[in-house]
Length: 85
Image (cartoon, rainbow, N blue to C red; front, side):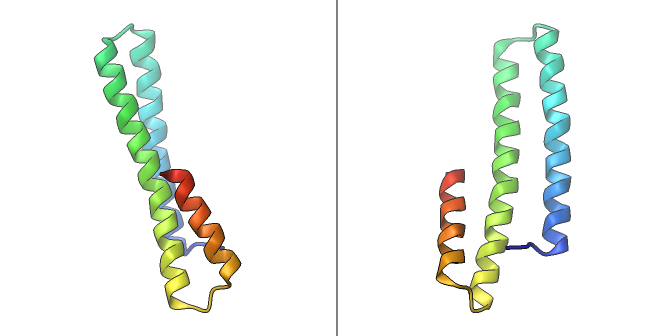
């Protein structure tokens, strides 16, 4: 299943933001920051990755709802959704 260009661009933007968060996490660890601060930033990066994945799955669900999607593709989409949960 291919995703519309606007969805792909949004996900790329989100992933680049996560990339920046990961670089920030590396610096926190290198600087021996407080454990609490590191864990908070880890949780934020994880949530951002989850949102990117859910954005893709939601786009797939919209495509399935609009067209005649084969049952196999719907099952694959459901499997992807479950991997994110």
